[in-house]
Image (cartoon, rainbow, N blue to C red; front, side):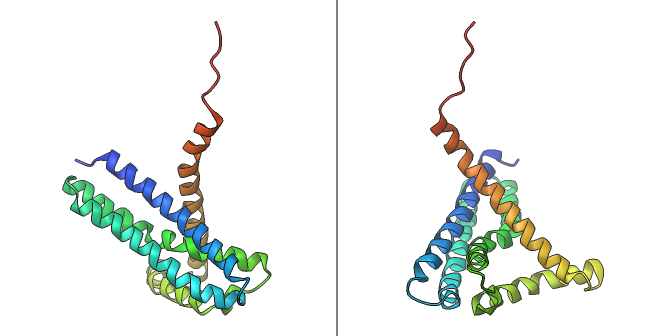
Length: 176
């Protein structure tokens, strides 16, 4: 039996980690711009952001494994973590990419971004070779970016929407 309440709690935490990774990395890069060049700041911020996001995901998985949940629930948590690890790691990277875009700078000059891209390529390239003989890698990388951004956006909306509903108050009741 799978505990949907536990999975919902873990997915909510995943969403919070995605939003926090994006916002913290973006804030750190923007603050760092006062002291150094964009690429130097990104090379300092991205490894720390990736490490923190990975540790948060790992802590959630370990907490689930140490819980009294069923084996089925634990297996689903592990499968979801494996499926969502790359989109989660994209959170701090996408903040740096967005800042570089608005600064009209090429993020490819960042060593940390290049290392991230190479690491993801090592995961995605065998998949693209298996599916389409390797000709699809450029498409797979673009799809990864779009899917990861969409997952992050949906995670953020899922996390922020309940707070917005509480701020806006209850729905008006029609008088009879």
